[in-house]
Image (cartoon, rainbow, N blue to C red; front, side):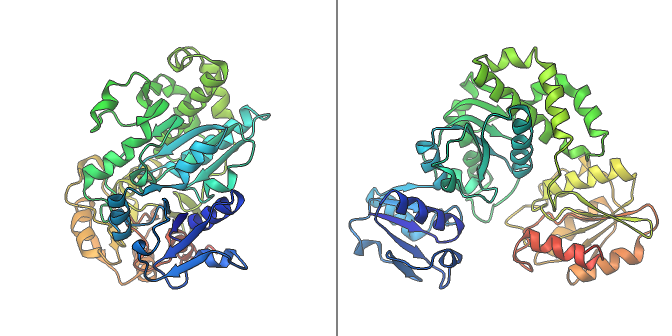
Length: 436
């Protein structure tokens, strides 16, 4: 018997999977009304809400864990002590799916890279069935029985931390910066969880140059995204089509995955392909021109009274905030950016950031649970003021904005102190700014 631990979107996909495979399960969630309940009209399975005693069910041989479950949750600690196997939906998928499996993780850019890569590969290889799933919002197990040629899977640090032996045909590590330190034990633990994506993959692509996991430094099948600098001219020309500068690393990662997929299909080595196939890179960039960039990610809403509004609500850590500031500097000029930021810090150490690599701003307006901590750090980039909430932040921004300025929402923090998620925060910014 399996235990489904957590009954949100992933938990619901576990139930669909186990029903199809006639695996007996029971379900446990600490919440009184978990969202997964809405997806089913009836249950034959036992469901326990609130409290659960693992000792009362000696037949449990595996726990199917959702990514949001605390790593040190008592039930998981007890299960490990009893030798009960703990498995994520991504691990199940990579074990059972017959498709090629590309795993993508990183602190920033995961969803953009996965979405862009799927778009480009579908254009270049129209006869191949290519899907994306995982942390991007499409539970992986819902695609497990489909006959796909390639599955591009967005993997979070939560998936990786819970996973013991996750494997793929390609593992992509985009970047690592401070994030989720309210969940992970420390920055080193977070980093090691991210590096897992490279450990058991046939080919690895890394935007990170140095590893904490010593074994990775010895692996010969890991290639570094910086080697794609040889296509710098083509990428720079592409960015002139109106894409923000900070998409450069994401585009480089997309090209790396395209080259990897082609090398696997053609049974060539990745290193040989990267050194000769600039035509493939040009075709990939041309395919990317028709991609519609995702909402809440440096989303230019429009211009009002000469002031540009940008919704970057997906920015949930300080590194993405600083990246957005730099893109504004390049697009709109020096000290034109009025930054709206703040929220729940998630354990980030704002003092341990090199702000010297960021351009100065005109003004920062900081709101949210950890606004005082963030304001103390962000004032290194320019004048700053505290606000009550998002609406107040927008009012202050509009009162000081001049023609040619840009009002940038790039919170650098979680939204959960005031909003249901980052999309809700972004939609409120759009509404309060008058672009709905």
